[in-house]
Image (cartoon, rainbow, N blue to C red; front, side):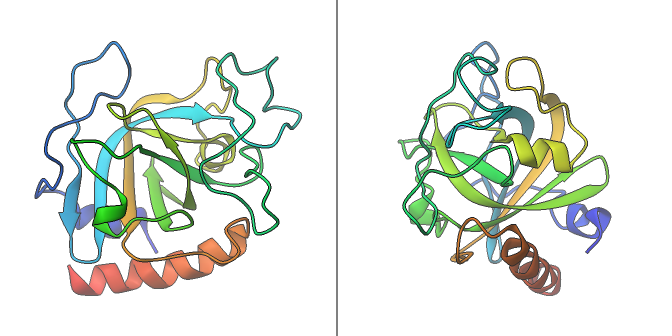
Length: 192
């Protein structure tokens, strides 16, 4: 599934959020959540999320904002591993937008596109209510983005397409996310 095929379907936005999001604390709110047939999308930056299980590159020493939990958990009940699992952070539900009301759930499939590459990820964590544009260490690495939790990420150019009512099982299986993602991306291209 090519990045350009997917990007061609998200050139214009039908805004479904009640307002817009900031990409970082210090920026103004410019990012709407947009609706498509079978999906929602946004175009933002990528901040690095290293939360979840403590690993070599994701821990208190490497990440000043490290938390040892994620909103959604592996099939064994443990938090996700940001270092090895590509996952995306959605803004916690607020008056701006409620992700679950839009058919987005933990383990849902996301096509993350940057620099002509597509990385399939899962919805793995929730973040601040007013900020959008965050994904795990492994997502950044897969897209060739600097994955350092303190200094990495990229300021713009990332497109997130979240497929409604999808669920990868188990959530920690990246290969399952890729298989389902490829199938849903084809469906998305056919229906939009």
